[in-house]
Length: 151
Ligand SMILES: [Zn+2]
Image 1 (spheres, helix red, strand yellow):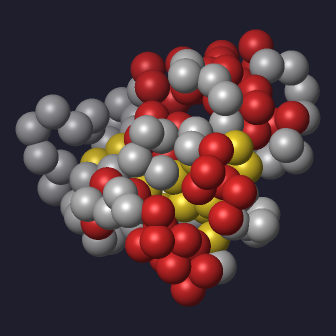
Image 2 (tube, protein in one colour):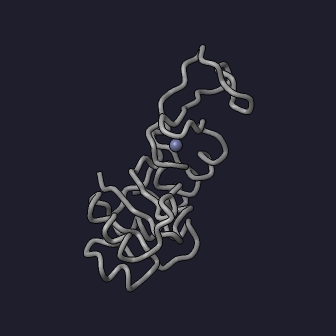
């Protein structure tokens, strides 16, 4: 599966890609904005660079240059570029830090604000501890993806 690196302007898109299960690094996770640093990062980790910067895109052979400002339109551009976009059955990746998530057990303690076990399944990022469940963000992205048409 292709791994991605989103430039600093593509934070929302990075979140969407992670929700779709794609291993996606985001420039601002490392406060990295210089072209040279992003190109080196993409090369070292074999990530496909996604950028809205034309000059940057020209310097990475497999970069995808995105024209749209709106993240939904960017998803359509990515799909047109051949990137598979679909929500997995369950979350696999943390949309905050790109870490893996694990299913929280029925009898594990859940912090306040996290749905109880008898309400819905919950996942937790093994790296940053963030909790996830299939709530409105999940439903919204599912709807957005289906509005783009089928893969
Ligand atoms: Zn995380």
